[in-house]
Image (cartoon, rainbow, N blue to C red):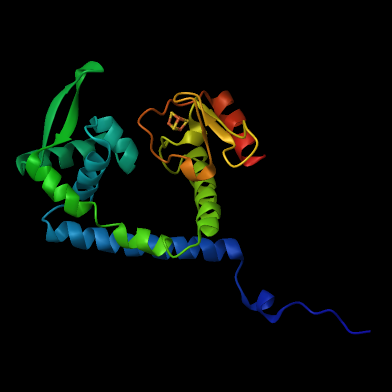
Length: 218
Ligand code: SF4
C-alpha cells in the first residue's frame, strides 16, 4: 500500500499566519516610506501629513480625535498642529459640542496641500483594486478581525468601527445585507462596515463583547 506523504512545501514553509504578518509588515514599510517621502517633499513631518489627510477626509476634529485616529499622543498632535498653524495650513475654532474645547480645521492653503497628501495611499488602493470583489470582502473581514484583536490587546487605540458601536446590530437580517445600523435605521453588508465613523458611539464592554460575538460567530 502506497504511503501517504505530506506535500514537500509543508516542511519547507513557515506557518501561514507568520507569512501573512510578514506580508503586512512589508506593506506597512512601503506605505511608511512613501508617506515619509511625500511629506518630506512638502516640508512636513509624517504626522503633520497624516493630520492634513485626516482633516480633509473628516472635517474639523479636536486634538483628542486626531490623536485617536493617528494612534499618537495628544502632546504629539499639539506639537504638529502648532507647526501646521505656523505654516498657515490649519487654524482653530471653538468646538460647539464642548465650550472649552477647540476644533482644528484646514485653511484654504491647508486644503490644497491636503489634496496632495490624500493621494499618498492611492497606489495601495490601486493594488487592492486588483482583488476580485469576493477577495476584497474576505480581506476586509480579515482586517477587521485583526484590528479588533489589536484593539482588544491594547496595541492600538480604540477605533471608531461599526463592530464596536452601540448602534451596530450584526447578523440581524437574512440575505445579502445581514447587519443593521440603528442610528440611520438601515441594513448593511460587510462591505459597508466603517473603520472610522463620526457617529460612532462606543458600546459598553459587555455590549461590545456581545456585538463582536454575534458578528464573528464566536
Ligand atoms: S453609527 Fe456609524 S459606526 Fe455606528 S453602526 Fe452606524 S455606521 Fe457603524
